[in-house]
Image (cartoon, rainbow, N blue to C red; front, side, top):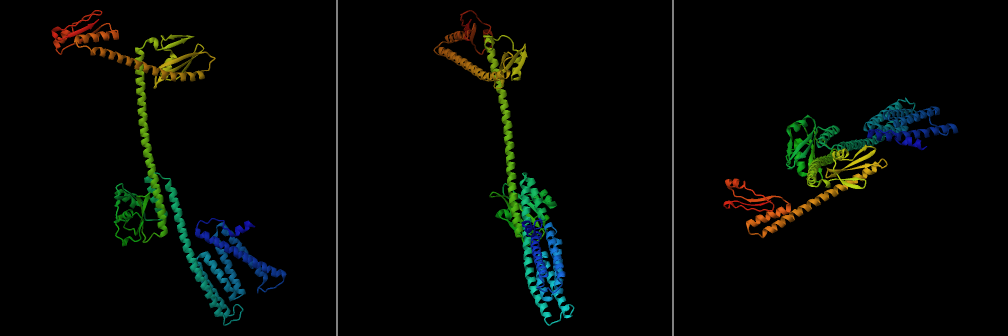
Amino acid sequence: MNKLLSYLFVLRYEYRDPTQKVRARVLLAFGTGAAVAVLLLELVVLLNVAAGPFYDFGASQDYLIASLTAMLAGFLLSIRLIQSGYLRQAIMIMGIILVVYNVVDLAAWGTMPTGAVFPIILIYASLAYGTRGTALAYVYTWVVLIGNGIAKSQDFLGTKPTDEIFYDVFFTGANVGISALLLWMFTGSLQRALSRANRIAAQTRAAAEAGQALAQILNLDELLTRAVDFIRDRFALYQVQIYLIDEARDYANLAASTGEIGQALMAQGYRVPIGPRTVVGEAVMNGDLLYVGDLTRKAYRRPELLANARSELAIPLRVGEEIVGVLNIHSLRVNAFGDEDIEAMRVISNQISQGIQNAQLFESQQRGLLQNRRLFLESETNLREIQRLNRQLTGRFWQEYIQASDPGQIGVQLIGQELRPVVADWTPAMQQAMARQRIVSREENGEQILAVPITIRGQAVGAIEVRLSGSQSPNEIRNVLQSVAERMAFSLENARLFEQASSAAEREQQINTITARLQGLTSIEDVLATALSTLGQTLNAEQGTIRLVTLNPSALSTDQAASSSGNGHREIDRGNGHQGEDQLS
């Protein structure tokens, strides 16, 4: 039962046109009401036949039952067609039913009963066809009334002509006329309201579509181009443009435009000054929408290519509190934009502003990303250079340290429980570990050989090699060797630095000692002798010489030929007072 009621009163088919959808709902209710009324009337007739005639219908009851059954079937078929999307066919069928019923009623009853049918036809025609249906139904009413009056006056319908025929026709026509006028006004207002609602709905859909399309574009140029093309095509406009304000906020530069005119203006680098001389400039200056319904009555400047435009609309584009551009629209019609159009354009302009903000943020993020990437690459390059220098310096320091050290102290070998200095060359496994700077595993004579490099700041300075029996787990030994090598590298570097620091401190102490001895001497000979003897003791030197020379080249060449030797012997030569020598041997 619920499904039947839902089918009779609830519209199931989705009509795309909102006006058609409203009309289908109303006609569905009309058809359902008419079907119920016909069904009830047919039940009354059947009950009258079954229980005995208690009312005279004035016609053959069998004919009346057949007519009502046909009408019921027609209304049910119309309901089916409405629910299936065939609204026009349903309107035709219900109209035919009402006209046939009107003819039958006219033949059976005469003028007064027919007058009750006319309002039904009038209402139906108004619902089905709007104001046109109202006018047609009213004309039909007068045609039927006049025809009925003529037929009665000529005794064509078998009724006696009376003086009341004119009164009946005029009274019925006047009543129907008043109803027709009211219905005409109502349907006209309803059509205008539906048309306005449809237009608002279409503009709302267009604004939503614009928002969805523009929200996915992050390139500013593409965003502006797509926006002006969409507005022009969706709203059938003459010219749509977008201006962007320059940094100095003196001019609005044309950033996107439609059609060949737009391409020509873009090629010219067209721009307008911020000020009252142009619609765009004044809109930016005032910070509010500006609409000029008739450009021929205003003194605004405009490009010659847009001389045919008759109305212009400029809407500022805001990002936050700042005006970043203007949406500029032209039409060939005077007063082309209504309140609904302006409101729709305002909504779209807000979406364009949001799109501009998103595009600017995206471009800013891209610039920041590129800057960060550049800094990262520079940092990575610098880090690699630092690592290279560290490896180079570490390798040089360790090379100098090893060359200056006792060969017996630069390696150690464990055989059984005995530690021995390394005197042999590097093994192949150790050489591979040093070259590859990673663990090397080899098998030799049934033994597992593992070699691990000792790495300091990326520079391999040594290697550890162990030989394992087959019963030990290589993976566990690898981890142990790796950990030991890392800690050993740290300890070796600390030990080297400590030795270098100690050597430097010792040298500084020796220099300070020699300096202290020399500071108390007042004779040049004593200074030379003390300095040379102290250096010899400190450095364990077998021979040393200190000379003082003049800048005379001949004397210098003669003096350089003199020398003396001997263990613990000191000699001073003052030839002509120009040269002195203190020699320790």
